[in-house]
Amino acid sequence: MDIHLVQGDITEQRVDAIVNAANSSLLGGGGVDGAIHRKGGPDILAECRQLRASTYGKGLPTGQAAATTAGRLPARWVIHTVGPVHSATEDRSDLLSSCFRESLRVADELKARSVAFPAVSTGVYHWPMDDAARIAVRTVRETSTSVREVRFVLFDADAYAAFEQAIGASD
Ligand code: AR6
Image (cartoon, rainbow, N blue to C red; front, top):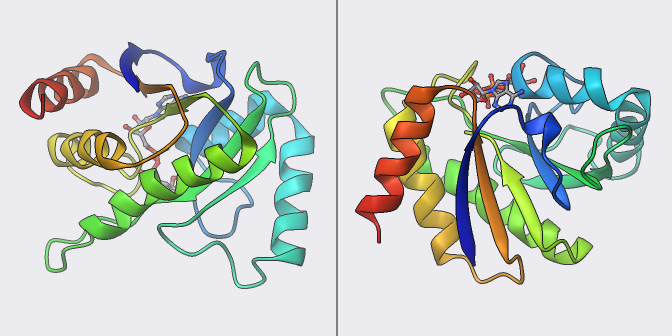
């Protein structure tokens, strides 16, 4: 698997699937989630409502992932995952790791070969960027998957640097 870093906007990525840092309601929010629904149009939200009605009545649990199509976005699918809120008193890194593992599992079900991830949990959910980058890189490297390209799409230079360091450290 090739791992690439890009500084930019995940909604603009031309890959098979982009991953959304969603919340368990699947009904939208700010950050990446807001941008995906805004640019992708109403079809994504309609499919999210269907997922809630059919499979996730109580919401998508933290650490899990579920897919919709991608509306007007250049990607074919959006894989929605729910990161954990960072806690100073409880180690929730298994849940953050699970977001990447489960997203790749769903990507395999879709037969997606290229997947773009944002830095899940590092915005509204306050996960420290360096630690999130280490967990993200380690997990995708350790996951057995048919995905050939993982692209981490980082919004700013500090996030990019954190992922660059994490990739170097776990080579
Ligand atoms: N492309 C790439 N990265 C982005 C983009 C973008 N368009 N926009 C923001 N980021 P966040 P979370 C970065 O808050 O922490 C939502 O309200 C951002 O700088 O989107 O998992 C959901 O509905 C940060 O580094 O996700 C949930 O309620 C990273 O993406 C909650 O926020 C993640 O920030 C999820 O919080």
